Length: 307
Ligand SMILES: Cc1cc2nc3c(=O)[nH]c(=O)nc-3n(C[C@H](O)[C@H](O)[C@H](O)COP(=O)(O)OP(=O)(O)OC[C@H]3O[C@@H](n4cnc5c(N)ncnc54)[C@H](O)[C@@H]3O)c2cc1C
Image 1 (spheres, helix red, strand yellow):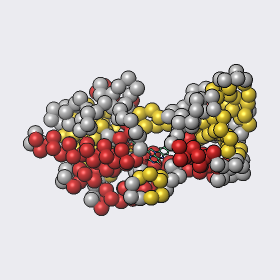
Image 2 (cartoon, rainbow, N blue to C red; image 1 turned 45 degrees about the vertical axis):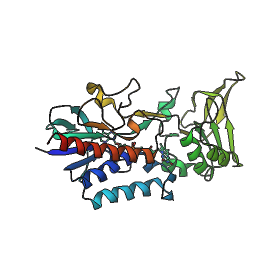
Image 3 (tube, protein in one colour; image 1 turned 90 degrees about the vertical axis):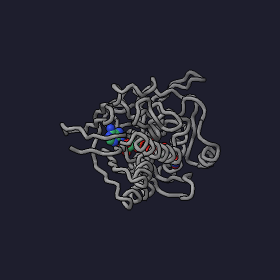
Image 4 (spheres, rainbow, N blue to C red; image 1 turned 135 degrees about the horizontal axis):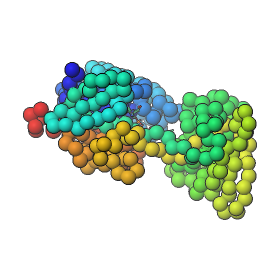
């Protein structure tokens, strides 16, 4: 039976940072992820605010982080965790398609978030067939075309800057004002092929065979219109990946894992780290910080309890 000191669920920045600290504390560690190591940054064109690195593509940063865990010989398995049973002193971690659970003395949940959808008319019909949640993955398909970006937070504005270099025109739609940081907003506003329409409610998507436009309601003027486009990118926020944890009662009402400053959940030996936790700023730098703290405290916990 597989038994570990710590199982790290998720190989995004938080999980990989935790892996580095766990390995250096000489914990018998397993890191798992159902996707490629890197997490959400794999889907971003450029990361420019991770201290000490300058400007780097998201996938290159993810690769570097993963290489770091490989140098420290942290075992990685491509697996999806579908259930966790808390125990004393061993927790049980169930992987998709496997009957026997993995036993572990501690768990670091670094499972990140997934992009939100609008749940409006025809969104499902055009999902990934005109509507995308990843500019770096799908942006090239819209070279020389008109696109709409929905959402004016940091992700929406940053990915619009990338897309604006590819597409003929980009219309950004936001339900209120832009909420991204000032530097990014200024850069976007300086682009000649970008128009920004604020106070727009998205009513649905329009098209027969393929996506032809977005139906909007201007909440200031009360006017409805269809804005034509070949593609849409949605950046309207995130939902935590925590559905499979419901039995543990460690989340708040929005599904985010509640942790204290030591990254401890209410269950001894189970930690949360990164975007899946209740926090103010969901970024690479804060995810890495959380992962380090979680692994350090998992190590202290194991030593203190002689596990
Ligand atoms: C478009 C976009 C642009 C961004 N740009 C920047 C930027 O420029 N700078 C910056 O600092 N931040 C940026 N961010 C935010 C940054 O990507 C996140 O803050 C960071 O990736 C969070 O890391 P994490 O490890 O907590 O979660 P994630 O990166 O989400 O990683 C979580 C991992 O857990 C895995 N997982 C989830 N559930 C399970 C399960 N049940 N079993 C196994 N594995 C599981 C997922 O597959 C995923 O790989 C951006 C985000 C987006 C969406």
